[in-house]
Image 1: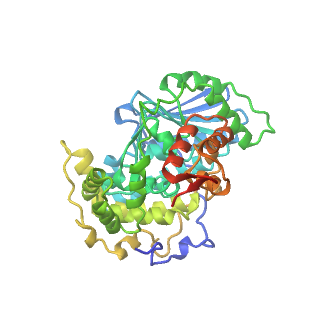
Image 2 (image 1 turned 90 degrees about the vertical axis):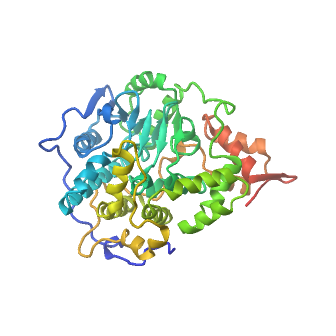
Image 3 (image 1 turned 120 degrees about the vertical axis):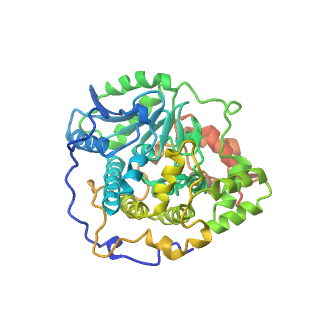
Length: 472
């Protein structure tokens, strides 16, 4: 499978003109009242998604309310920190309101256009958060999937709790892992992003921290007190954004009650399983991934279960998603959302989305979807190419912020990546304990660093007389 869509389009060239920047979205007649609650506590501004009966699933009404507040707070000297949370005990946000979109799509081209407009609105919101000029914190307390991940993943601080359930379940409904998944999934360690994207595997609680999805792990019982403490922080006018972020980071660390022990909750994507994930999901075609899973001998039971999982996913979704992840490694955060908008538009016109949502989310009990095409062999490269092009004469999705980057500027608040650990091991002839202590010191004794570095060293290095040697 080619790593670049065969059809190039001038709308995606770096020099291509953007369409005029859109106005800040405003509420429309008929938008639900009180589906988002806003609050000000000293210097803290909170956004609480308030549809608990629908697990706070995101819709256009909510996005239109959030936009003006974010823009207003960005200009305000009184607003120091932005906090995103969800009402109720169960979820931050279980995703976009895809059931409503599927019903809309059945109305034909006009309905499909309206659904596509929703994704444009959602992606503009996610991009605004990703490039925001003030500290943003997301409480991933409870179910955090799809659209909820978009509101969280691009924030500098993402708090997992014992109730966190993370997943990108889009391939189960004939869609693709959007909301910036093209950006953050390929940048996770090894092939974990590919694995999570194609299988929709869930990460619970502290696993979100170990995998790089969350930046911190706190018990849900401390969130209220921590919120109050954050509200009381005062930043002098001349303090830069990086320093503000450092102050917030140190303040949050004060509220940690520790991580679950590894005996209680061992790292899930670790050891031999993690090696098998990298081994099987490193390929650039879905067919090769299937073959690798069929040939897997060390983790045969896991490979068989994974094959069964993938075999009931939309073949189109699997192929588009894999292409998206391979291309997304090179996309900036801005290009990510512009590309994903076009991919989403194509899926709104594709039969698998309506069929997938109806089969998995609206049928009682859920049933197996009838995908079109039904097999991987029927999904050609040309069909996949079409998802990555803009119709001639159209321009890229205009965004509300000019900020852009190729790497998260706030990645230092997460646990060290495997690539960082590899670089250090290769350039320093040190033993295991020395390497661990070096990272623990660099990260100011951040919880999870010792466990993460120890796991990577155990899996990827050998001890020699000259120190640790990285194993390919």
